[in-house]
Amino acid sequence: MAIKASELNTAAVELHGISKRFGQPARRPFGRRTVKKEKLALDQVSMHVDTGRITGILGANGSGKSTLIRILATLMTPDAGTASVFGYDVVTQPDDVRRHINRVSVEASFFKEMSPWENMLYAARLYGSGGKGTRARVEGMLERLGLPLDTLDKPMKQLSRGQQQKIAIARSFLTSPSLLLMDEPTTGLDPRSKREVQELVRTIRRDRAATVLLCTHDLEEAEVLCDHVLVLDQGRVLAEGTPAELIHAHAGEVGGSLEDAFMKLTGKRLEEDEEAKDE
Amino acid sequence: MIGNSLRWELNAFVGFIERQKNLYRRYWLWEAVWLLYNLVSVLSIGYLAAGLSTLGLEPGQANLHQTQLYLLVGALLWTYLSLVFFEIAFAITWERWEGTIEYTFMAPIKRLTHLLGMSAASLIYGIARTAAIGFALIFFFNLDLSHANWLTALAIFAAATLPLLGLGIFTSVLPLLSPEKGEQMAFAVQGVLLLISGVYYPISVLPAPLHVVGILSPLTYTLSGVREALLHGLSLAGALPDIAILLLMGVILVPASVWCFNRAEVRAKRLGLLKRSG
Image 1 (cartoon, chains in turn brown, purple):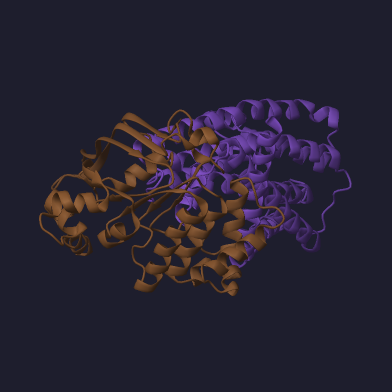
Image 2 (cartoon, rainbow over the protein chains, first blue to last red):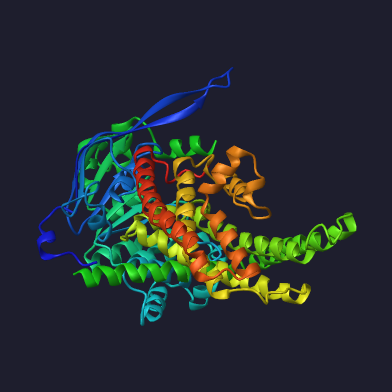
């Protein structure tokens, strides 16, 4: 859905003091009863995202990135604070928020037996289209994404992970969102697919004037793609600025990288976190 | 403005029916297996009635032909009612299993549209599958439906749709409340409905507490009404009390179940339960 002129002057995203806590059931070591172990996923997070920019949220696993995205996608309600998308409150005006957003998540949210076309037609219907001309639009998108047209009618489960992720992005294009929430869209992709998806993100901003909120733990990706970056750790925003500003302020030496800045801020490397997760 | 909103919701409503049609088509082998399973179950009930005479029951003690018809109508209706109930009640479980639940819940549509779209698809599919089994029965049994009042049966069948949707939506709330145990609870509800609704016997044979619960089940009125219409030619006027009860139950159950669903959705979003798959 296109943004109204009045919304152009509004911040794409505004967060004030957002907190979210989960009570996780845990088993006692030598008993059958369960106790509640609480986890603070977001701790008083405030942020501002300008319209038309790519804003990156950097953080390790469990830093609160996905919780933040879910709150903005109206899939979760915060315990405290306020969050708005183009001026619409995510809790009290979810319908207005939903008309402006779409989300590409790390796992492909598709009906696996259905084909890309059937999945995209379903998405189009939910977002007010799906009539004549939809098939031609979808085919055009697939061509732009470098996907062979014969993939359109195969079951999703027969496509590679890279192809599925491209279809997920194409599906989000189909609904013309003003704000695209991307939750680790390149995780698990081979280098070539990763580059192609990154190119697509650039295209979205260039051709569609959409705002992109990109959650990633790929620091190179953030450095290359993002206009503005926030570093999130244990549910708190540690720093924000352009990649160059963060490198300058926190990398500590000439020729430093965003990874150096991230390490300095959080005291950890994202690769270590990934390795720990794999183990 | 209202016209645009209505068009938007209607488009999404069609989208749910279209999606279910595609899913049934893509899972055609499973659907064929379920159709066969249902057909075999109904046939087994029919042959059970036919075999009663060989178990020592004298023809004079019971009208075996009527008994067979009584059981077959119950089995066929249960096939339909349980299928529609299952499809609606497991709508959330199904989406969680596919991994699409967040995508659907994030869509800019009313939850009522979502639930009614799913329900409409279930009803269409349920009628088609039950009709296929019904036609098959004609070839296996010598059914005497000469006394049947089809108009009355159809009217009761239509009136039963509303409370059936309400029950299904109520049960679909369970997986939203508890991702770990909701699915099992939904199966349990389906089992209880089979026991208390008089699918294979009049509910008068049940112990008093179950009899009372049976009186509260809309399926009881559907089964007894349709049976009376098909076996004894119950007139439309005679069926009006049952139709009124069913409509009243529907008028209460549908809004109440949608309200419950909305409350459960709010709770799931507060506790972060939408994503969890078990």
